[in-house]
Image 1 (cartoon, helix red, strand yellow):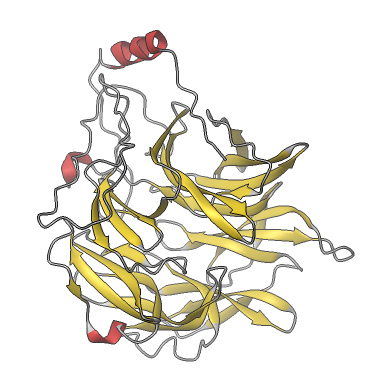
Image 2 (spheres, rainbow, N blue to C red):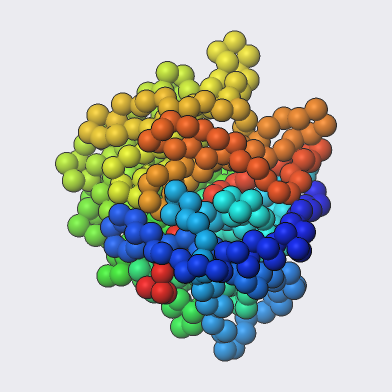
Length: 414
């Protein structure tokens, strides 16, 4: 698929930028655990994405990615940050090929392709300044808009859902490599320097990295992955909850909340795929039954107390996909509440940094192929809105968004 970005006319953009810069922005403070979130508005000089071919060799002296653009005057959307990043994947034969990495400002209805075909987005830094992308086994660190890419690895393991992460404070980068059929975990500082083998407890069949804190403690999945990047195994942690998850063998898609005290996962059972939640504080495990729906993606709210779930609706007669339910679960009983319904397959979601919105994607069948649908849901009002995508996503072959990242923008580089 060749993706074409439809850009606003130059004169219209200039008018927006000049008007936006006539007033000084007033900060909008959001109630987050540690930091104040700001939503930057357009700068006077548009940022041009980097499209140059990356040299597939590491540099001896890594270059520092570009600094975050200075915020300028303009309105602040309800979500505290209006910036989403994602990749697009296209089915080719029996496999999928990435169509590039995209930046989407849904408030301005603007899209930039910041890495070309073949590159996939793996992670965004906690402060919103840098990204990790890969092209096959090559892993690269770059500035937010793709500037100054540098290679971190030529053995990157891209067969799982979370093979690369930043530490919670953004000071360290960790990633999984595959060398001669065996996985190992590497680490570097936030500038991609001091690359070294990570701690020894991560070196035995680690396939997914779930979290890392500033004290050097970790959560990870030890197991195996299939060709579709579905990994199963047992969750390990190096903190005080080291034994809390040992009984959860054979689980998939593990996701911790922000305090690392709650774990959501799926597991195959006789009645199908079930959603589970483990509370390490009281040791309780809960199985969540979705009335025949299949959990396909889920994400924790920023306060770690609510779980948003996409559950695929399946026909008991034909087995076909009939759409999706969006559910929100809250402890301690974790009873699912259906809050919205939408069309499409391969659906994904991410909660906003301030907890006020949920961004979703799905793939819609069209008369002449498939196209990507993007949506925003507001839990407070129960409003689900389809948002415009200023780019052509229609494809004769199946196309979808593998994963969404809602960029957390931190003011003053703090």
